[in-house]
Length: 352
Ligand code: ADP
Ligand code: MG
Ligand code: MG
Figure 1 (cartoon, rainbow, N blue to C red):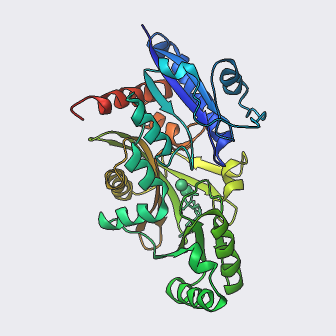
Figure 2 (figure 1 turned 90 degrees about the horizontal axis):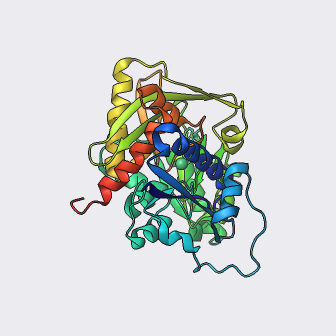
């Protein structure tokens, strides 16, 4: 009578490949001695076209670490594999849109089976950079200056667009960052240093999303804190990311050797404590549950800490920041996945 855990990975996002590697690490964690007699894994692979695969195909993708490229000619998105009925707990490890943003969480909620991580609200609020920033502002968390713009404004007549750029330029200055509201992994993000770059970046960001955010750039160290728990969550030690590239873009994130992680980050104890407190406030502000990684900018010269974002389903490969932060805080990988499952059960119980 092992608990049948539906491991859900792949997904319709730019982070499809990362999700497979995260899922593989989790599967390995569940197969370790201390978990193997408690949990049985049922793998579910969501192809890039949105079709769900189970059984042998899902297992193959999980073991090889490579996506399955055979896509359906007529994808039937309402048809789920029969094994879904056997799942007693879901472990979604999907990053980005259609997985981290509340869509899958809505579907899983309807199945009435407990699942790991945030619910619909926490996932959606955490994924949408505009909603997220509003929640952080309401909680009094310090953030860099930003403006929100819409695709409609960007793709409006030249007169409206010129006025928009004038306003952004005078409010935020250069360099600034242009970001689609609902993505991750730095996809669609541009650092701009001139009017011309701003115009190009806005037009490009509008191809990714209807809503766009533009932020004043800061020169700062990038530090991250892991959060684990439901209503009384805990914060991990702080980690730092360093790199030589212009900013932490997609290539830097996913090319081995381009970025380094330092755990624990070399920070004054008071700064580390402040970041941990802010991480817990951010977790509550968006109504996250189970796990999140909260990312910050630390301006060493002034001592300022700005919250950058929360990621409700952070990278979970064996070398990812989230599991490494917990390993350094005293919770090894196998124990971490076990705790996440127990937190999902706790959250699902009638009193919660
Ligand atoms: P994502 O959700 O895709 O990770 P982020 O908002 O974290 O998007 O931005 C990705 C990276 O871009 C950050 O890790 C950082 O390197 C850089 N960046 C984003 N916003 C700013 C900013 N306001 N000032 C300086 N660097 C930034
Ligand atoms: Mg993100
Ligand atoms: Mg980020």
